[in-house]
Length: 306
Image (cartoon, rainbow, N blue to C red; front, top):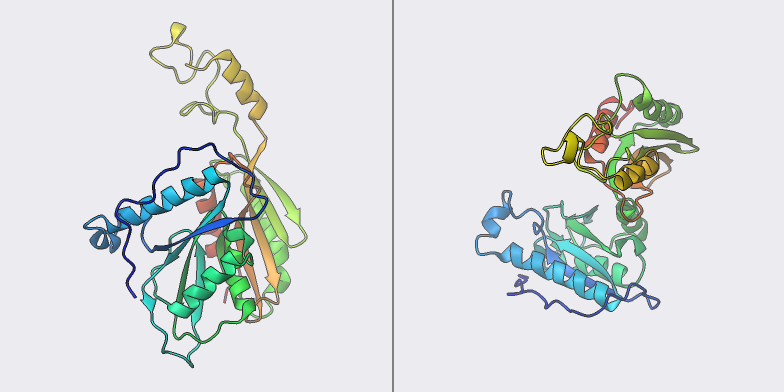
């Protein structure tokens, strides 16, 4: 089944925003894969005539329309839709936050995913986008598998690493020590952090440096010295006294975080380690460089990976 992308997208609705949604209304867009990757292969070829751009515009206009009408929104990125007919083979389901998957999905699996979201069984899919693929057949997928895959939308999840049998006995202590290692000299991150040991792992809390208010004005800069703006009077940094006071007040406050969690008895058996974003309140900035550094070491150093 081939979906035809809309020509001009949905019209923007110039009406006041209604942030409250007491009825839990939801606008879901079943979109294509690659709308956020139109500039890379193989999606460049699929976007020769602007098809993916049109889909992306439709997603954005639907989000705007939902927000101004007081609805929640959700975007489901679906790959090539495979007709029913492969019954008897188990479908290998994969769900991921955003637009990152590239595989096909059967019509029945796609319909089940959409029905679960619209039916209110996946609250984390609200005001977010996700991708679904399912290689194999269209045999019914167990609820616990759906729930475990949609768990990736919480945070969202950044990585999950299965462990070998018995490896979980030492993994909890290792996770805590791993998180604390980023506070030691030589292992520091681009972002200031605090570390909180948890019963099931650890939380790495990102802290505001206090200079997010002024791009290019970092912790090494001093008032009246350091980096200077050529157009500022007296050679002082182009940062007003009020902004400096605000920056000082912000420094050290939490600004999102990363949870490292050990889970036992997961779907399929065994144990695993997951990392997902946490405490991402409105206005929190994603710390991509710090997250990448943490996850790179986690993948490389976590002992007992399956």
